[in-house]
Length: 239
Image (cartoon, rainbow, N blue to C red):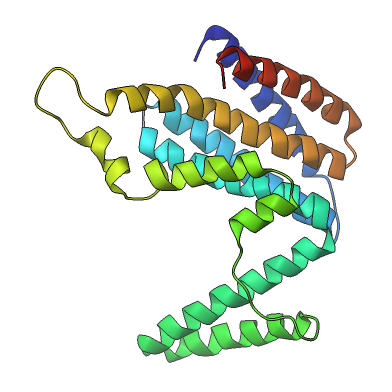
């Protein structure tokens, strides 16, 4: 990163830290979209800090995994803002779908105690769903569309294919090739430049929306200014 990029990263980190301090004082029911925003931002702030430590330690793959989680969380913050109670419903549907899959695994492994406990939780979740609504897995593309953040979904797809999961592309940077030039050197240089910007974008977008959700207007105004700086930084790179 350039000195200007590093300064911007530090300012976004400072904003997120102060926003989390303000968020920790918010109270409400865990089914309230505002509280969902608090829970999501806590995760995003943790992802941001984890990414920073790993990236500075030179752990590219590990930091990419944390980045992908942060992008997912930022997508959820945006969707929660636009859907409100509809997002809470999606979370319940996804939880039910996940539990159903775990119950099958527990049953295959003859873990009767785990089956019994998971089934009790699943029944409780299903009972809270409106009539005609069934368990369903999250669709990240659809969620990003509903949250009006297609660019974050694009980043999510790229990270899934080239670094965050074990794929041929993600393993190539660890392979030495014969000769002076290696096919992944250029790719590594590009990702090293872009991924810190992606982390800034995910954190800042989530912070901007969340600040509005919990009515931290001063921090919201600061986030808007930082968004302008981030846009200029990315435009200067030709992105």
